[in-house]
Image 1 (spheres, rainbow, N blue to C red):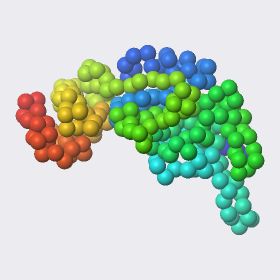
Image 2: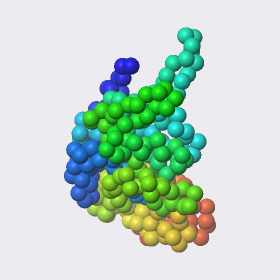
Image 3: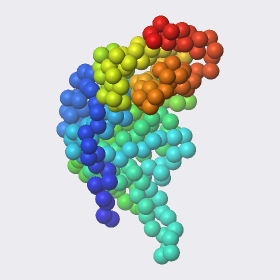
Image 4: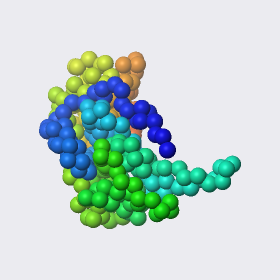
Length: 267
C-alpha cells in the first residue's frame, strides 16, 4: 500500500521558544528511537513542541487526538466493506509505523487502558505492531518514533496511565513559560505589541495563582493568545480578557470578580 508521506510533513517552521534543554533532549531520544512522554498543563505548548520537532527533524508526524471512545481498531486499523468485498484500512498508528513517522498520541490518558496496551510492543526492543485481525506483524520503520502527551493535573484513579505503560517511555515535563518568554510568544503569535502582551501575561500569572483555590487549571498560554487575537481584531482589552480568560475557565462568580479586579489594576 502506497502512503503519501507529504501530507504528514510540516512545511513551515512552527513558532516555538525553547524554555530549557527540551529540544536537545528530544533530539537525543529520537536518535536512539526512544519513545517520549510529554507531561504538562493544558495549553502550555506540548503539541506545538511536537510539531516543531517534527519540522526540525524533517520527519512526518501523525497526530491522534485520544478520547474515551477510541478503540484499539481506531489506532491499528480494521476491515471495511466495499463493492469488491472487504479491504483492510490501516489506522494512524499503523500508518506511522509503516512509513517511519513520529506518531503523536495527544492526551493519551483519555483513551481506555485496554486501547493503549496496543502500543506496548512498539515501545521496547521489538518495535513491532501485531495486527491480530489481519494475521500480520509490522516491523516499525527505522525512522518511527512514538510520542504521547497528557496533563497530570487531570489524573485520577479512573484516568491515569498504567505503570506498565509509563515505564516504557522517557519523559519531558513542561510548564507555562517564564514571563519574558511567554510575552514573546503571545506577541509573535498574534502581532500584538509587547506592552499589551506583557499585561496579558501578568493576568495569566494572577489566574494561575488561583489554581487549587477554586480553579482546577490556571489560564493557559493558549488562552492568552486567544485574548491577544481578539484585541488585535478591535475588541476592548477588558472584554477580550473576559471572553478568553475568564468565561472559559470558571463559572464561580467570586473567582470571576477576583480576576476582574486584576483587569482594573493592570489596564
